[in-house]
Length: 403
Ligand code: PLP
Image 1 (cartoon, protein in one colour):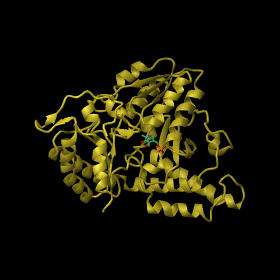
Image 2: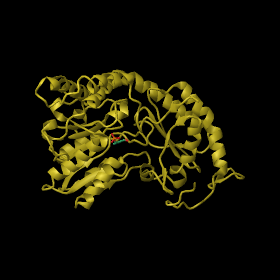
Image 3: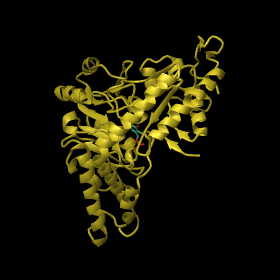
Image 4: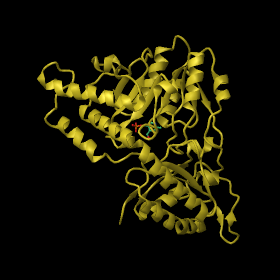
C-alpha cells in the first residue's frame, strides 16, 4: 500500500541532505563548541555558520538569534522571559484564542502567577480585529503575542499591522512563526517584532531544535540557567548536529520557497475545490486568501473528523483532525470553536497539510476515495438523517465521545 503523508504541519520528514550535513557532527566532529582547544574549533565554526544561515531565513543578525530545543521552548522563553523581565513595568499580556498550546498554556501558567491575560477572539475567517487589539492595550501591557500562521487552518494573521501598533504603543511584540518559517518569506524588520519563534522540524529539519529571534535590546530573563552559552540567554551545550541540520533545512527552504509554494498551493487548491464540489455538505475553514500555501482545513458536516481519519489511514493516507478523541472525551478544536463554527462543523474537520512528497497523484487518490468514505460514515452518523438526506438537530455534549 502506498503511503501518502498529508500531515506536514505536525512534522516533516528529515531531508536526506539535512541528515548528510548532520553526520560529521555525530561522529568525527564531536567536540564542545565552547572548548578553546582543537576539538571545539570545527563545532564552533559550524555553530556560527549555521546561525548566519538561519538568520537569513528571517532577516536578522547573528547576535539576535538564540538556539533552543524546540518551538515550544522558544515560545516559553519569549513569553515567560519577557514577563519576568518586565514585571516591574506591568503585568498584562495580550494574545489570541487561536494560539498553539505552547503559547496558550504558557499564558495560562502566567495567569496563575499573577499576570493578567487578554485572549482576543477571531472572526469566522480566523482573523483578529486590530481595533480590538489596540483597545486592549493598557499602561500595564508588557507583551503582545500573536501567531504568524495558524497551525490548524494555515491562516496568516496581520503581523505587520500588529507590529506597527505594538511599536507605536511601546509594547514588546512576539510572534510564533513556527508554521510560517520555511513556507513563506519572513522579515523581522518588516514585521517590527521583538521576538519570533521558529522550529526546524516543520520544514524538513531535525526534531528537538528551534530558535528565538530576539531583537537587539529586547530583554528576556533566561529559563535555562547554566553556562554562558548563547550570550547568557540559554544555558546548555549547543546541539551542534541538530543546529547544522536546521541550517541546511533553512538553506534548502529558502532556495525552493518560490517554486514549492506555487506547486503546493496549486495542489492544495485542487484538493480543496474538488472535495467541496464532489462531496455534499463540505465547508472550508479559515480565510481563503491569507494563508500558508500547504494547508487546507475542511469540515465534513454531520461526521466526526476522527472517523474520516481512521478510514483514510486504512488507505495509507495520513491527515489530521481538529478534534482529538482522548480518554473518552471529545475535545473540540479551540481554533474552530473560536472561529464560531457550529458543533456539526467543527467535529467534522480535517486538516490536510501538504509538503515536498505530495504529488498530483496523491491529491487525485484522496479526491477519488473521499466521497464514498464520507457517504458511508455519514450514513452511520447519529447526526445524519439518511432517509431525508439532511442533518439532525442534536444537542452536542462536549464531554462525550461518540465512538
Ligand atoms: N507553535 C506552532 C504554531 C506549532 O504548530 C508548533 C508545533 O506544532 C509549535 C509551536 C511547537 O513547536 P515544537 O514542536 O518545535 O515544540
